[in-house]
Length: 334
Image (cartoon, rainbow, N blue to C red):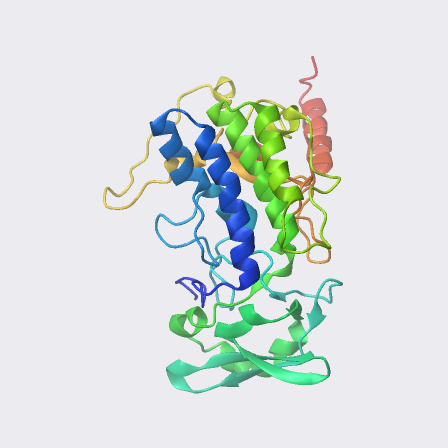
């Protein structure tokens, strides 16, 4: 299975760089408003740092804001998924036709043994053009690879080893994709959330300064930002949409005993804090699906891990309906 970084992770387009520059500007505004030097470093290293790569960088690359807002999840498996990539990456995979991407013409496989490369053949202005896995980020518009495109190669692909999958790690799931302006707005929204809730920056001030950056973006004059769905109420930024408690609340009042320590290898980095009930995770109020872009401001929030996990792949309304049923079933109504 693919185990390394996405192919061409360090190759970004002019559009990619422009979006990343705006995100860095947003982070820099927040960093400059944090007076305490230790907190300033904490924000930059954990949240605000921007890596000018497709996958938020290796090791201590980009911060949580870049990973959550701009990049798809890390993926592995016997498929050419990118192990993180920009959400506006132009090549997606889906189980069915989608209305925001054109189907490719076909897949070819070039080379032999340990040098096999996926070639995606697309139709651009009536001409067939071939894009190998390490160049698909250069596609001028979004294309989708459908199940029928893989069918001619199944008998060959099922024998690929880890190295072959890794060197063809070039595609993202349609359900996790969005347009660049959606990702930028989500970055701005989540950045304001972190600034206000964890670094005590005045909401009104940071809100207006960051929206000024959005309004004056020069990437595409046809795109008007912020969109009408960009929240304006401080409450929407500071509280978990599921439990309504503040994001900094660790939910400790609901645990009867302290979490038991478990052995962790001393030679590897610990991610225990990410598994705490109150740790913040990106949360989609409506579950991601292939046929509609839902990674956009108004549908994306930070939420507690416990709250996020409880939703699984359901919408917030479906989750609350289920919780209500459980409460009634256990006669816990007060």
